[in-house]
Length: 470
Image (cartoon, helix red, strand yellow):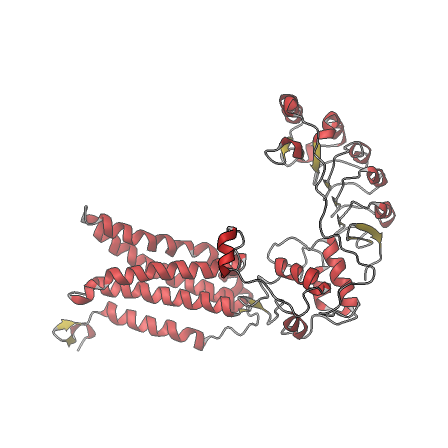
């Protein structure tokens, strides 16, 4: 006898009900059949899985549409059929998003409590949506449970989405900027340390927390490596120890953070910016001096706790028409740093590209007292630009990545007392050219990736020191 003809209490058991039940059982068994073991697997799984963040918005939109159609259907009954169709689409979109998410976690070797919560949230949500389909087609008392199940679906959707957002943005994404009164209610727990005044607690862990813990913490664990506590850091990951006390050169963690950013093994991964030069210097010194959780200071390292605010620039509000016209003439923009004009201007050359060179830069010299940052990356400027830039007395940041500069004349920048950042990545600057920068006390960030000088100069702790890195 066909399944659709089987009777139970006088009612037909519909194939859709049986299919929903079987699908729910398979979903519940999925984590037991294919375990998230924290190890990386096939590349094709990661490739497909990376479509999860894109596809996951489809079931979210469809599920939110269902209750709106149900309510509107009371006025226009034709919309009730649309609600049924959208609900069916929600089931398939949930299954697709769940499949891609599982491939992403399994292929990338993601594990941890946060990944597990997000996974089970996705499974529970899919089963609940299946339950809505079942109850909507039911009759009698079962049909009356449909609105309650739909409400549960909305709650599950919010919870599961929050878990996914925490994996991407960190556990404190929603709480980081809570108003003071709410924080005082105790909803935000501060990290505690056995030795709160140690160098590790004050300077090393904050670097990991800001750049690494999102992928190597309690919520999400890649390669079985966690950096959210000292003990787990020293325990290492699936490939063994990542910190060898006293030996930065053999420490996998240090090697990974000093690789070129385009290297497949570079950390932080997933498009995150490299660690700051002084942060790398702290980690190297900490490892070299024993990687202790107790040591309060490190030899040769003095940390400036707070950077003094930069001085305000002159008021240029009356010159804005002239500034705008001059920038437009050479195909660039001069953008205010903030609404406060005393914070200065940023020279942006992205629209000009290689059409912008030394002559165009010199043409903007009259506005030098108001410009605090120049973005000259991938333009046609040469070493001749340094003579012009030396006249930009308020400069705090210079981007020269991917240009033809070799560093001849780079020493002219040492007279810029506010300069904190220079990016020379992808240029032909040499060790001899960058050596004069070691005298600059203001320079905090110097990037020399993919240059002949790499990594001849390390800038850390508010002081520049020439140092040959391994």
